[in-house]
Length: 353
Image (cartoon, rainbow, N blue to C red; front, top):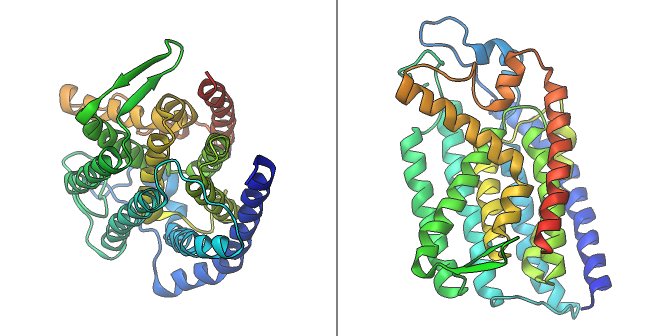
């Protein structure tokens, strides 16, 4: 398949995935309302309103779980597309062996999605967890338990990529250096995956913020994957992109549906894995730069509590800090998208070096 035919296939899949998701999302929103799968209020430990709740109390009652629909649509379409493509005579190019690459994609997407789904179920229907600081009740699995499972999954994926895909090098742009990490690639890959799982989840706090940035990321990495003619990754990105665009229509302010942890954890994990498989680690941190900044801001807040016994920011992550100082939600999101676009352009340029 030449470059022009490949581009045509990818664009067609974006439209197809968008159409399927657009047809399903309104009935899915109604189903979530019926099942009472909606956002809960957070209350501070002293029963007074927390800063977060004072800014987002109006969002309580909005359906949570849009990521579940996207997971189902993308996974099912991705599973069906290869038998259909073969039947139509489409040539499938894989840089590492089709079955091995497909396993990494499916396992990452589904395993982190299931972890997020459990967290969503516990968070929506379970009891709140009382923290040791006046930041409010939190809902879902305990942070340390989620982190442990994430590292187990990330470690397994890192091992599989190292052992069966044969990836163990790290390219450093500008200096034109290639580091052979050997078996050290496994913990490195696990860190990348877990970092972006949590970075994406942290960023998913304002209407349209994370999903809009994800759309920008997918366009950029669609270009990177398409340039290498890696069919599995390119097809997956195309299907994912179309579904995200349909979801974003209902997720922008005022959001009619939230993504939930099922989507956030699966999407964050795939962001890291796509960077690993395409060998674009440096561009990954640039293109996903807003996710990185959001994660760092939360880390700063954690350090403040652990070392200084007080917060270093009014509220973390960064998008909530901007809200606390008076920025409107739509202003924060639109400017984050603009920053994401410029970072994506810079990251694409970096990938060409």
